[in-house]
Image (cartoon, rainbow, N blue to C red):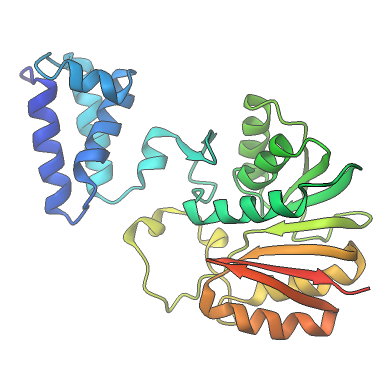
Length: 274
């Protein structure tokens, strides 16, 4: 394999990615190469004429092929930024989305003036990004990370350790293994209907973390039924779901004494009536 400069590799890689419909081709190419060379992206710009070591070039080319095949960038480099922190991701976990940060913003507002400890459970935790972030931002919260997947819980536990977050992992299908009542239930459950159009990248994410029956609402409805024994009066359930599902969730939740507080983007908040 002949030597290739950073400038030339980035130019060719960006074009290859754009040719297969990846609009962020240049950025993705820079991220891949920076990760492969174990240096910041800014360092690439300062050394564009430097040659890429042959052994690193082979790795960069292999990673570029993965991206050409639409493997998500987060799986290629092994992490994703969420609310200013780096979270490890693997194909066993859903990749954190920017829209989920709205859930964090709402929860920080709901918990802003609290002085006493409160219990929160992050259901379907995946990487743990929701529960871990809330624990770090609101240390008074007693946070449980719940997931049915032991693989996901292992990743969440690794993220908690790396970020020094004191949280408790729990293997549980929804709230089946939870005990007592919670002041807050946060959940980013599978809500995608299999008939919806979606990006090719989602083919690489765990199907059980994306899709649900009943027009995507089966697991959300099941969780709402469980709140009767697991949510304090005046407690809050905060969910991520597609905006087209929000009204159905609001209507369904009424029978479990849950009133709509607000919606913001993909996030919907409900409160248990007294």
